Length: 253
Image 1 (cartoon, rainbow, N blue to C red):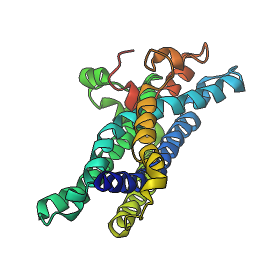
Image 2 (image 1 turned 45 degrees about the vertical axis):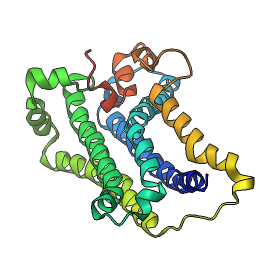
Image 3 (image 1 turned 180 degrees about the vertical axis):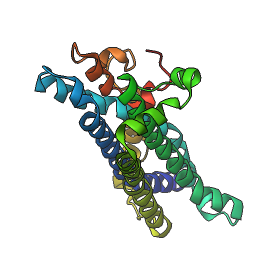
């Protein structure tokens, strides 16, 4: 029983840190949508009311949360695995390396993909007024990059690329590195198991599980989040902006 309580105590501490990290990434994804709006979309939505624009950003957060939900499904099992007494105390150096680096590398790679997709998507959006998908990549490759870069000019294009890399660095890499350092030195808080079993079960298992599941579904209803939730206006370019680049990548428009 104590081993289970130790697992829940440690995992609840890690999940609280990951909540801060995911909030940072969500903020970065919202900034990407704001950049897309300012650079591309606002020039093509004459006559659109402010309520529809606001609804596009609000619903866009739901699509971003859906992406983060799917990314964090493996993290649930990673966190529970690295919180076990056996994993923490084992002298096996391979286990210790996996415990320390696997979650960090996984989140670094996935957030990098999010930001690269966001960058390519914005440049494709500038040329085609819709989200970039796998099917567009398969049919025309990255030919749009040169056309858009020529239209924007070298200095502006470099500025956009630098902005997205900085978003990844400051909203992804640095917060995650700081969290990892804290986890390496953070002791397992001693818990009064008689009084806190329910709390530990809630914060170390149930709440993270429900939060990730709800985020991945994107809705309380019986059906997953779908493209209809992005239909906030008669102006299709605004509806396209509502979607998340990573969510839209495997869709066909």
